[in-house]
Every structure is written in C-alpha cells, then in structure tokens.
Length: 215
Ligand SMILES: *Cc1c(COP(=O)(O)O)cnc(C)c1O
Image (cartoon, rainbow, N blue to C red; front, side, top):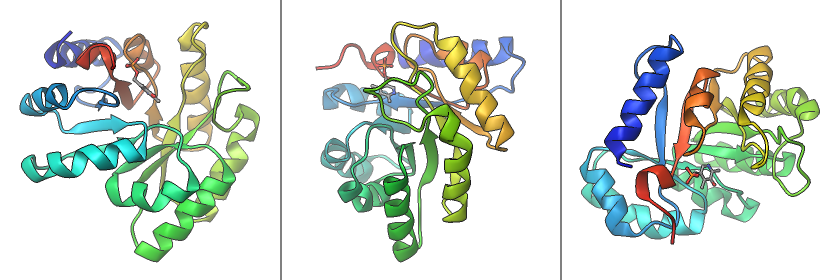
C-alpha cells in the first residue's frame, strides 16, 4: 500500500465517523525500515514519523532533518529513564508514558531544560502481564499525578492485545480519556486504524501498511 492510499482511507474513515477532515494525525512508523523507504515517504510530503527506540531515532533523524523541513518525531516505544534527556531533545511527542518513575524523570528533565514534548499516557487496556502501561483502574490517579507534576498530558495511548477485537480496547481508552478531560487518543495501527478512527482516535500509528514489512 502507498502513503496516498492510507491517507485516503483515513479521510474516508473521518468522513464516515462524522469527523472533521484532517482531524486525525497520521504517524508514519518508520522503525526498522530501510532509509530509502523512509526517504521516499518524506519525498511524498509526509512529515510526522514514529520511532520505537530512542537509539534508532537518534541514528536516523538528525540527518533527515538537515534535508527536510518540519519533521515531527514521536517516540512510541518503551522508554528507559536514562534515555529521557535524549528523547526530549529529539522528539515532539512521547506516547509511552507508562509508569510513575518515567513521569518523574520526564518532569525533572523538562523543568531543567524548559521544554517538554506532548505526552500520551500508555494504558494497558488488556491488562496483559507482559505489556507496558498503566492498568485501567490506576489511570485516573496517574493522570492526576502527571498533571500535578505540570506535565503536558495530551492524551492516552493503547496497544490492544493481538488476539482480541481491538474496538473494545479503543472504546475503553476513549472512555478513560473523556472522563479525565483529555482530547488526544493515540490508537490504531496498520490493521485497525479505521476502527480506531470510528472510536475517536486523534493519532494513528501506521507502519507496515505504508512502508511494507520491517527488516
Ligand atoms: C510498530 C508499532 C506500530 C506500527 O505497527 P504496524 O502494525 O506496522 O502499523 C504502532 N505502534 C507501536 C507502539 C508500534 O510499536
């Protein structure tokens, strides 16, 4: 599939859900993709990208930024506290704020540097043992704690369990966001971004459907 086709499908899903055209941000997830493919998508005009690992992002994006204006980078994968400074320097958004220790580390560096990317709190909607994220029952408390630390919380993020209908997870995330007055919903990937948009996604994270299979 091409970038153009994905953008058309996003527009169609916005229309079908009665949502404003352009209300959903497409994050092109470029992790583990060859630079040539990433560059092809940059040449088509895409400027918002997602990376899982700070290390990989740091090795790739400074060079692209020298050649292309207006690149916006979103960190969407698990973040270690010792990588927070680098993540803040590199990115415009972090979608994986998943534990108190990480939130404190971000608050500390943000205060020191005077800037902070937009933050999304990752909620483990499927309550999976192996998955990162705040459990749904703890989400309200954690959101308040982040706000008390003056963190710029833009919204919530989830990755539904692979073997379950994603819609119920998207609906749960939307419900938690609404009752906390949060607008941002980072949900939906290559296989399910249309149903995420139907349930209110403001940011969809699409990788393989744009770039092809990863290395
Ligand atoms: C890799 C990844 C994606 C993109 O997945 P695709 O199925 O390739 O679209 C989205 N979100 C997160 C958190 C990811 O790690």
